[in-house]
Image 1 (cartoon, rainbow, N blue to C red):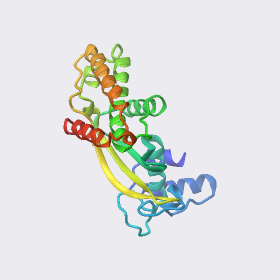
Image 2 (image 1 turned 135 degrees about the vertical axis):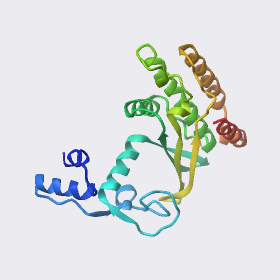
Image 3 (image 1 turned 90 degrees about the vertical axis):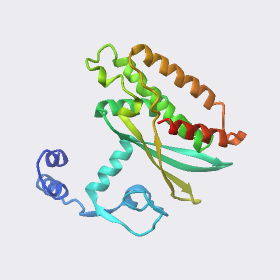
Length: 242
């Protein structure tokens, strides 16, 4: 309640206001600062103990607990994380979050939930295949959502636009295995294809069929069978068409 009340008011210091409201209501005090390592990974190494996993530095970072809580909550709500196979019995973690451009929160949430629950990308066949599946399957879910709304949506601009009009790209962090722990290995961006431009309901169906054909080919390839370079070339070509 203190959180909602604070964000409904105008203030220069939301953290202090939340603390004050919480104390007034419960008689208890919230922590002033916290370390990101305590929230994300107790046995952290390179970069994981930073507020943002954007570097391989190991210096200690602390900030206000509210910022950390919002970051953690946002990751649980809006990110996709998957163990990705990079070698025999060796798995890294790949974490991505969408960068919204022109999309309502309810639509953003529904499309992402459908992707995570019913159409997730596979992490068992290498990084390039995971990235390719992620982009294709997300575009597929976005088109499925538009198709389900086509008969009820009054604003055609909300439906018939390039997919990268709604979400510009995925921003991700690759965590490399360090044995018992993981460290930041790479920070990356995956764009969405700009060639998917439905102009009516019929084209929504046709583009979805094209995506299904792409997926049917991609899912026959894997890193362990020597297709890494082909998958990487496909992923990079698709990104060049963004």
